[in-house]
Length: 470
Image (cartoon, rainbow, N blue to C red):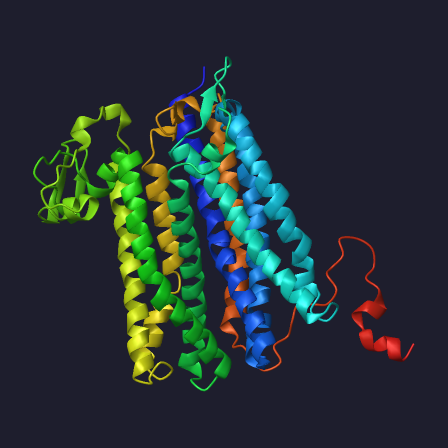
């Protein structure tokens, strides 16, 4: 009655499109909220006005990213009921409470203090305003905590039981569900990726303005802070990624086989395939450029350690190798470029040319969107590499979809694409316009009075000086 294979593919494309669009915004707001807290804290400690000018410069951009992240996130939750109703029914007793905790803790915390942070600079004390900024930053972390716990449980499910209706329920301890085997590694890797993403966006904006005016002290300050983050966090991120990869090898070995392009088992040490064209039909990587036994050394710390390949796994359980293979290399390649830029900035700093070396500024400008591309590639590896499972080893993606006709899913997908590119495209263009303006002395802050949804904004509130004359 329904063309389920086509409808399933369209539903997967729709969710991939909306979640990819959505994650671009939290990937920046998580790091940007912490950056704003650091700027305000340094301003309170030192009294240096450049910190406050940068705070006011970036808080307007943060507000736009935050708003678009909230709106795009709401859309995804509806898809659980429309396109993935079977998954929602079966996994709801586990997924539902965790998502509710995210709303009750993180979202309420962010929403409660966001207004004070955006509009309260001249209405509350400095310490209270700083507290509000810290709470918003904490809220972004708590939100990431719960969302990544949900995703990690789907990757490495533990602490569950299955009731008579075939639903996943808690087996007694929610701690086993929340702190599942992959969660600590995914949390650390994702948060550091968010901080790096923000650092490279901030660094690119600073580099853009340094190329126009090397004497701008605020551009110098933001560029310097961003390069410190790149130099420190990028190598740490590579280390965390290695730990996450070892955890994935233990719990999701098929995903690692796809990442490495290991169609065949290697009983005496597996090569590291740098580049090539995965050929799933023939079970090999064509035109492979590889280093013998290096994959075994990296993954098992032994040159001769045996590595199983996809030939040991039923074909029905193979993920799309080509997508995972290349997404992984994009992520890793950008990670090493980020670390390279960080080291290059340290060398320029030591030589006293951090603000004069134009090639460094051009490199940083080009690397501005690298964090966004890397986190998207990383999530593609995570999600596509888990296929054909929605819940690893327990529930297949084909079993999770709603019984919808392909035309219905296609219509909503087209609507999403048109609306997203129109609405969020306009938002991103406006953000780029704000970034193109240099941070100035006495940078303007957001309005002291938020816009009202209805009614008339009191004139006195808009003109505080009126209290002295009326």
